[in-house]
Image 1 (tube, helix red, strand yellow):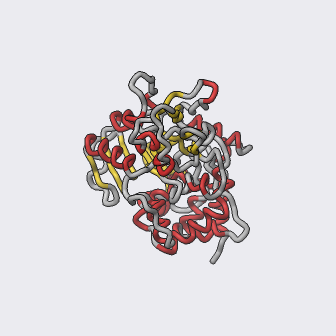
Image 2 (cartoon, rainbow, N blue to C red):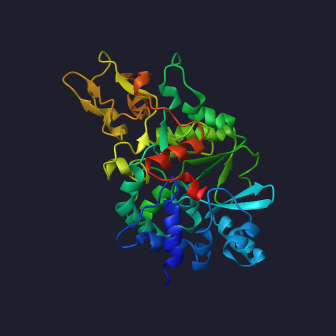
Image 3 (cartoon, rainbow, N blue to C red):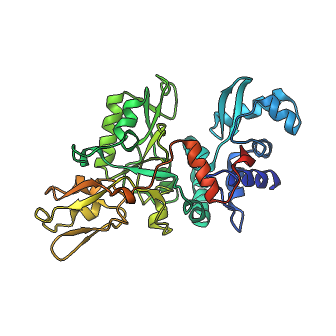
Length: 359
């Protein structure tokens, strides 16, 4: 196999703010070869974050614009690159590995691809996940926050659902991947939620089950009841999806449990507190906490605020009402990037990169 197209594509993906770190044995090249043909990889390696038309791309790298259009269209259909409307027609742009084209491979995920992803996770994800700002941030379970505490719209999973015009649910690719490598998760495989501002956007998608707003709200409730952590893209204008995650399967949250990356996910603006008068020391809440933030003290449960991500799952689990979420002091709340572009700029700077090179 000629690795050069895949090396060029891997380098370009690593130049994105998300990153795509190389490995010593080149497993990332095998992964790309499983998804892209050599011709597709060569073409994709010339794409940038800003969309370009097939004619613009063909002029830049050579070749026939019509053949280029067919090649790009095929990659976009398989979720490998992005497609946007531009003044000159449809434009195509490079998509990161995560969060990006990997999550779009649910229908193509098999044991071989799952094994490649698992190997890449163990070799490269620590470098990818340790950079701030984090890919994802936690949203608290809404009903665990007292009604007298202010919640910003971007801090609320319910608000994201309410603002959408189309709703859908599909299988979690992370739990599917772990099952395919022989390490199935105890959590249900469904509950990956997607949204769109376009009504009916998921009505004819073979990989997504379209829902009503009411059904989406119920899916959110069921995900929390199943012990799954609500996470979203780490910017205020995020509204495309809610990942309902776990540290046993999620490619990002496994960074905490398996790779020891403490800042792998941005905490919510809340943390758990214990009412000592109600705590009976049953330790049921520790079963719900996936971040080792709860431990039994001398008289009652104690919360490690540095480990607590403010998901609220322990509050749901406590049948004695001894736990609740409260807002962190302002000095403990990290600012959330206003837009995806702001997130990209901050992350590129943290990686010592010039965002203009892939703009």
